[in-house]
Length: 410
Image (cartoon, rainbow, N blue to C red; front, side, top):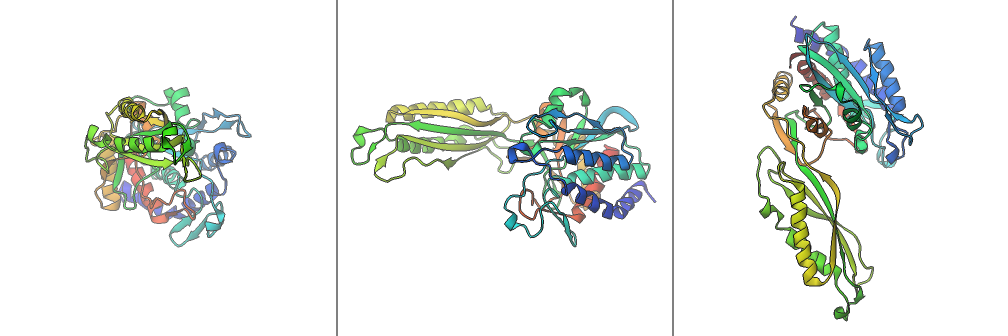
């Protein structure tokens, strides 16, 4: 029997253990204080016990201080296993926190009591991110049980706070414990993907959310000369901002869509009645900007258009960033990490995976800003954050097989 036949056979035999591992994790809510929870402490401690039973030693904890939770800390667990060479580490990073259950009436079962219906595991967190966490743990365990020595050191990181910004999770680790990571380390983040496992996320657009507040003078609508119509000025500005795609037309087929997007979205209510000219109007714009375009330049261009509109209407316009995330350098599409993933996916799924860029943000960006290559991949139906969140057992098993190959051979 070849090494990979042995690993795959071991994982096949461990499916029930993987299910029970998921069940125990789901049973312990780990919700951030921003969402009304008490953090990840209890789940991290139980996870630590489960890993110790699997002979994972030592498991290090780098807790981020947080006085808002009862244990005053947000645990971040780290485990590293030596390989044949020690010049870099191949990491898998998963997060222990989950989002709240939302409207319980939309659930067909108790959110924090995992149920299995044939090949579906249903419960809060089973996909986001317990599928990736469990697949990573059992991939590493399979290599150990089958005596497969990885080419380089391998490890797993179990972080807090991914759902609410990562200030107490991976951002804390990179800031407070940068020595955990070597300059050549690579990171696989199993926290997003598609249903057939053919998308490898290697790049992200910059995210720019802007709030535009136009202030004029309220008056009766029958005497508009007594006021300054803030809504009319804001509407003209919205139309003017429609030129943004012409100003920055850069195109990259790595992304879908392949260019920057600039979309007016939310609009706040101004006046409650029809016959009053509003003295204030507020709207927002969501921009996903191609890497390499400085967000400061986009804001400056918006500022110049706002000044022109303000002068014509005799109003003032304030622009405030709500989110301002300059894109991290992309992971090269031909990096060893991406090539290793493609090879493993080809072996396990029989499909060709493609490196892609996305418009949203992931925790991989923090590693990329730190100078490390990171890729986001898993096989998921994207049921995260929904009622009746689920993961497919075949996906969980296949992901573990892919992870084992990447960990051992990269």
